[in-house]
Image 1 (cartoon, helix red, strand yellow):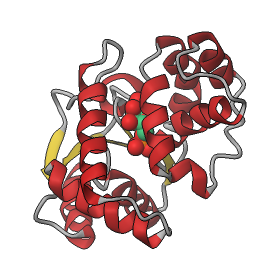
Image 2 (tube, helix red, strand yellow):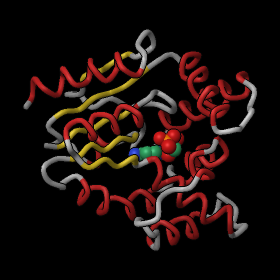
Image 3 (spheres, helix red, strand yellow):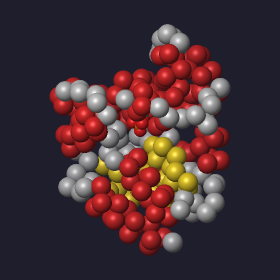
Image 4 (cartoon, protein in one colour):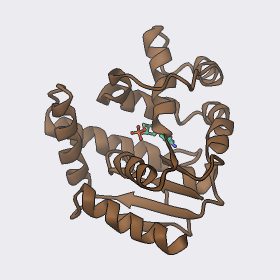
Length: 206
Ligand code: C5P
């Protein structure tokens, strides 16, 4: 079984994806980490994010076995990832790995921006997770504080709006709900509420 979860920055799709996968005994891939890791290669080597060829190279050579580290999940890397993820060759280079991951048994959960539309258009369940920009900024603010990054709420909100705009209006694989996706607005839900609502949708398809 393959579950595709898409949604804007800080919508809670990563947390939800992990919880669903743990509950169902499925593999989980946070595909944002792939784009963040590509951005990290450029930033660490002092290469400008505008260098499309270097970004494509970094995506082709990406070591997918080592996708973690606190820096990757920080605000600066999210912003940088949003820039290089608009380059088609970067997306192409990361596609095969994501599709292969989607065929893991007994099932897989992938979350990102284009899972239901491009990466796994045949997914058994497609969820589109949303929440207002203000609520997402509030959650991201708390999350960053917990990790010791004290970024102002207003600056996080501005970052989220900028990232939404960039992710939704780019020419390649823009963020949008697949026609057969079920939209789940989590503005008024906590993590448990979002998980239970999503699980009910998944169980109906099992
Ligand atoms: O989900 P996360 O915030 O970690 O993603 C970082 C950036 O990577 C997003 O703003 C988006 O531009 C890009 N991304 C993407 N396609 C995905 C996952 C992430 O373009 N499937």
